[in-house]
Length: 239
Image (cartoon, rainbow, N blue to C red):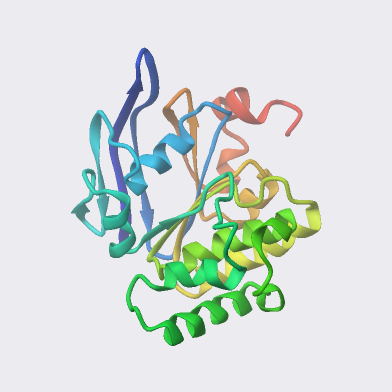
């Protein structure tokens, strides 16, 4: 089953073409990664999918429904959640309170939202820091909090924008396990990431963007052998 269909998405910013007729599908239960050099259009694509900006051409389909003109609030309610490269917690609220905000999407019952938020924090190994304020968290824990806030929306599709950036190798391994567990629980993940060994070990499929154009869409085993990808992004040293 196709969860997300990107159909010929094009986006211009003045004279700059950020995306040019980008198309690909994401199937239910997949971890699909989007990689490419800086400026390739990856975050612009996420902004379009989540409803922050509109494309100049093309359409976005979610479970077959055209959501191209949706705003972020509408997408959150139908089951799309995202994280941001730069974490944006509410600094005057505790970790638990931050997660509860997302859990309020379906109910105003504070007791139920607290219970749900605590379950998410336990799942992410954060229950011991539930009363800490975000300003006192490590980089890794801030990343986990960003993920927890997205999970609180109970999405069908999770858009993760560089959740492993800035983490050390041990922390990356921990995040890989978390993302595998999320996928095993039935969620579909679209991942932007520069930590290539994580991308290659986690992903079912990989899309490569370069100057806004899709130059590859296939398996992790194939992507490292594709000459266009090597020249545009991986480089000869990667091999």
